[in-house]
Image 1 (cartoon, helix red, strand yellow):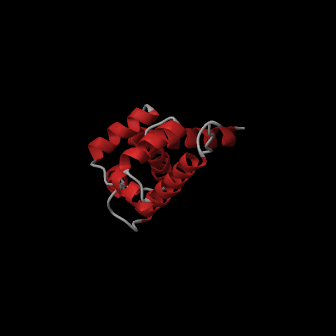
Image 2 (cartoon, one colour):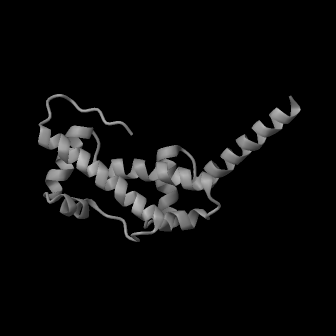
Length: 138
């Protein structure tokens, strides 16, 4: 996810946004690999960056144009899409990997993709099978 910044932001605000994104990416990777089991909130990330949570949230919203929560959820869904397609883990296990109850995870996933995780997986495999069948026919 490439970040574009508006010229008017101070160097420090840009730095805070970059540090937030780096810490968020690291944390999501740690969740994915099982190095940590509990998802951080804005307070924990702010602590890691040694800044006030309100200041972090305001800065992220100004610089990136989205709330920290929205950015977290978007990145989370992208990682989950990869896990759904590249593993045979049950959806409930993927949800729990990221500290979500399965029903809440399904709602989150559907909000960002328009479909449920299981439907997403099934549609991918159907497209793959159809594509392979077409190649065999030709």
